[in-house]
Image 1 (cartoon, rainbow, N blue to C red):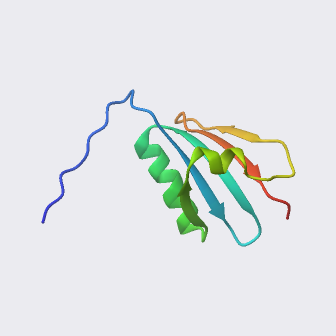
Image 2 (cartoon, rainbow, N blue to C red):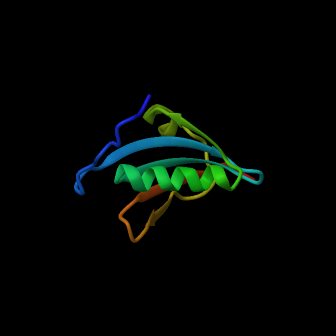
Amino acid sequence: MVEEAQSYDHETLHHLFLLVEAQDATCMLNLAGHPLRIREVVFQMVENGCRVSRVEADGYNTFLYDKEVTEIYDYLTTIIKVKFTKV
C-alpha cells in the first residue's frame, strides 16, 4: 500500500502538548508551528533518547514545575513553551 504525501500550506499552524521524559529531566511542552517543523522537533527529541507522549491541554495546565515557563522561538517559527519538574 502506498501512502500519499500530505501537503501543507506554508501558512498552516498546528498546536499540541507533549510530555517529554529525558534521563535527567521531565518537562511538558506546549508546541505551536508548522506541522512539518513540529514533526522534526519531536523526531530530534526521540533520536536523543527522550520518551515523548501527547497529552491534553489540561495536563499541561496542571503540570507541577519549579521554574518559570521557558519560551523558545526558533528561526522556523516553532514556538515552544517548556515547564520542567524539579530535578
